[in-house]
Length: 227
Ligand SMILES: [Zn+2]
Ligand SMILES: [Zn+2]
Image 1 (cartoon, rainbow, N blue to C red):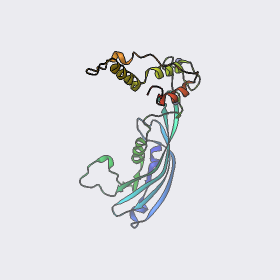
Image 2: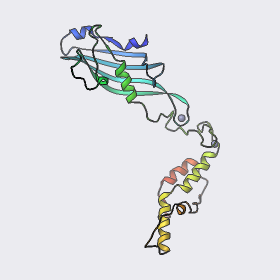
Image 3: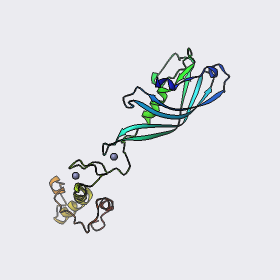
Image 4: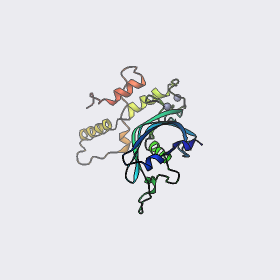
């Protein structure tokens, strides 16, 4: 019963005086019964529990969990560690009369004198999920043309694609050229930006044999020659 690990007995605290507190450490694998967290999830945390007037204050420190993701670029499975420095919830002794949001309601199980941290942990983990999981910040992803994992070896398509992108994706340069041409031709009164003309400029010639990565960097700089 992995889930029972996150149930903590708080009998002595509930019956104790206000301000009494205790610290426990969790280092377990938990079944969150959650689609995004299949199987057992490793969790480690320091938990400070303090008795207050009508509730227990639960402060979670240095919460660490390890989640299995699929890299959004190269589709490789990898384990990602999520670190949550601090999280806090209040577990009430009694259910209040008017409840706004049941999801945010935490209650002490007064019958068994326990609190269940599963939902708190589940919420915190989901809140800290990466939007775009990457196996590495340097992940090169898969080739758009042949599907090869570019982290393993290069197929040559990527540098060709970068070259094409460098030549064609300069919207401001094309606009400037378009305006220059329009003025040169004396079309002051009716300047029409025609889509066909946007793509019609000749590609810039590459000055040397740079690699794909240095090309990307250099293409990010403004083109001083033209401006
Ligand atoms: Zn990757
Ligand atoms: Zn390829």
